[in-house]
Amino acid sequence: MNLAIIGATGNVGRKIIEILEKSKIKIDELFLIASEKSAGKKLKFKNKEIQVTVLEEYDFSSAEITIFAAGKNVAQDWIPIASNQTIIIDNSSCFRMDNNVPLVVPEVNPEALKSHENIISNPNCSTIQLVLVLKPLHKLYKIKRVIVSTYQAVSGAGKDSMDELFTQTREYLDNKKIESKNFTKQIAFNLIPHIDTFVEDGYTKEEWKMENETKKILDKEINLTATCVRVPVKTSHSESVNIEFENDYDLKQIKEILGKAPGCKVIDEHKDAGYITPFEAEGDNFTYISRIRKDNSNKKAINLWVVSDNLLKGAALNTVQILETLIKK
Image (tube, rainbow, N blue to C red; front, side, top):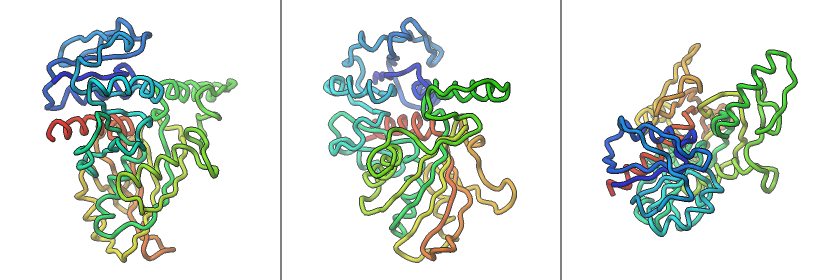
């Protein structure tokens, strides 16, 4: 099989290459594609150097499957053209809510891959880690409502945003004047309750994505409300989640179910440091679940804490898992 990666030099593109390096997927030829500013660059794969091809010069018929990891604008311009010649796995938000495009987390809804029109979407990073946790619980107890607050790392906004956190941190410690270019307010030593653009009713698009993507992947009857916050953390998104069930539940059974959930790992000791933080989750393929406890204000609800590397399971790893599942099917 020939494979192409659009946006190969970006944060997610490079992570995809790293994961493919370790995977058992047999690739005859790998095409690495990027914008003109990456022209002439070489990236290593399987002890070989591959020269980056400029997007405008690439022939989409060269690979059976093409991964897009280059953002919404590139996806919008090029996927309608490319999908006539190759199967697309897209990391952007461009086609996620299209009725003809499956939105896939392989551990949750692999059956969605049975039907596609050459375009498959990777969900939003914060949605992916959430539905991994919700799926086994919904199957047993039927979820009525979810309230989620996210604490999202700057890597989710791209390399320039990561650089801004590092620059602002140095400037703050040196008592220098701080300017924000990629965020609406200072991100160093601060929290920003605003991710993506504002939509209707005072919600942001990130919050809208979490609600609607969860419904599309799991069940349209689940009611979900979200507050999404950008935090001064380099990598890994964290989520505080309140889940209300239609039926009574057994907390011990919930812990056992989550402990067996594909792609998840429970670290839930009720003592100092008996939980996982974003720093510890960085570079790890697992989605971690901690602080599992009853909601004392609602006998049919629980609270928990979910942490996952947003560049891995939230983007690159889920993309490669879609690829693996697609090949198997």
